[in-house]
Image 1: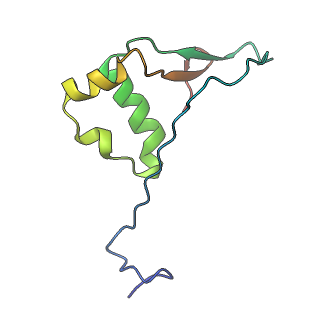
Image 2 (image 1 turned 90 degrees about the vertical axis):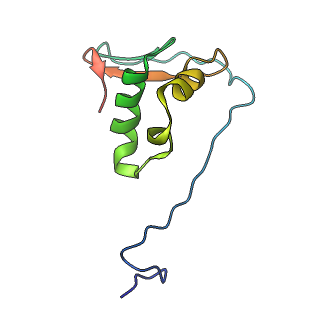
Image 3 (image 1 turned 180 degrees about the vertical axis):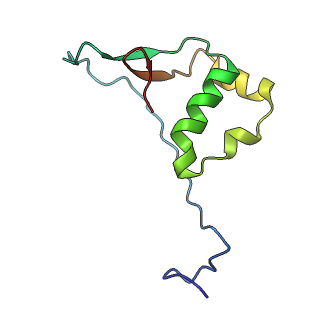
Length: 95
């Protein structure tokens, strides 16, 4: 039995899309509620990044970075050219 895309139900069709920001967008003042903030994670630990990755990507079946060794992942997430931001609600990462 197959679904409407003619893919067997025991198979999963995957589309991977990458985004790249080539220039910084113009700054705009944001008026956010006092219990919400966006903070840059500077040199995050691998375990914290994996928590974010799994929490955000779980419903979307993200898997690529789960397969990386810790040293490979650390080199990416702690690269000065890479910026990681975390949305906090009431002092904890938003889920």
